[in-house]
Length: 388
Ligand code: ADP
Ligand code: MG
Image 1 (spheres, rainbow, N blue to C red):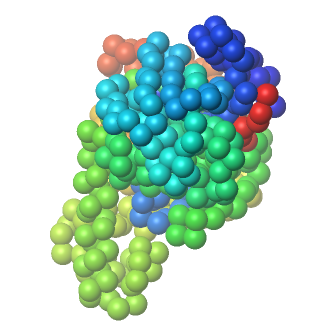
Image 2 (image 1 turned 180 degrees about the vertical axis):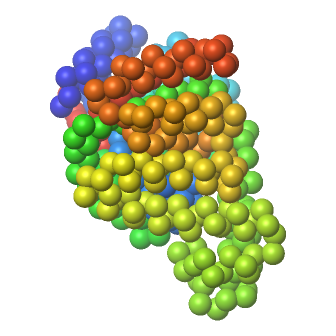
């Protein structure tokens, strides 16, 4: 296990002991994720290329003999407590994720006894690296272990997705939860949302590094235009299906079908989808051939498509991408995650990362008076749990 993760588990475990005067009996953890390319493709049953990163949400848990569920958020210095079966109304958003996860799990696997738990995490919140999925996946892994529930990893991440749908009212796809559960150290996955399967590719980046630049614009998916996009592509698919019997689902759509979409906005959304899926395949090929210049170009093309066709960028993200692209040692850059804020991902020469950081920081302060945060994450294994 990575040293950092061990250290974080130890401190979360110590905190548990301090608060509950007993040691936890099990630990679960789940990482945040980056996504190289393939954005807004998950709920459209397309392709993407994510990996988990070395930032985690950790859950330390100890079963109780009674029916009480008592959970402390170490980050928010907040506690929620209720008896199984009792109507509980979560107030803070961390409680919604927590209560949602427990309730959805509990509907499938009857909870006979309660538990004490502490949740802690260092996945940046609202930055586009998916702290919410890390939280759901960590908690769901903890519950699976605590109640020895017979559920496989894929079914488990689908339960996590339901938390977002039912308790946060965000109709998100499966990218975040899948990446958090299934990633492998040092690898990227080519994730096919139509098959719900993934293939791993070696992410040996040679002289290059993936650099994340945080716009610090908080992206509240629930309040954003996310659901609008889900609806737009779904409507476009229905129209195409009604006019072309060969199209059964998103993946049957080809460029020739674009003209079947009457609404020009919906047409742009579908164009993004078709081309973005192709870019994921092209990026996988570029990666295999270690053609990093080509990989960079695909990243930038993805950004243009997300900005102009899918319209999920924002001025701050566009500025960060344009600024990065001025630099000769940056091969490509794009917004990452749901959009409307969060961070960009850029492909930068390793020997110039320091210069890149300085330039981006200075330019962003000059334009927006915001201090960005720049990260170069490690690609790590997905979620896990163990008994202590
Ligand atoms: P992100 O892009 O990071 O997933 P979201 O808005 O979807 O952003 O989710 C962020 C929410 O997830 C937080 O507001 C909080 O409710 C929950 N969350 C994330 N990390 C933690 C944590 N360590 N402890 C408690 N809640 C967390
Ligand atoms: Mg989220």
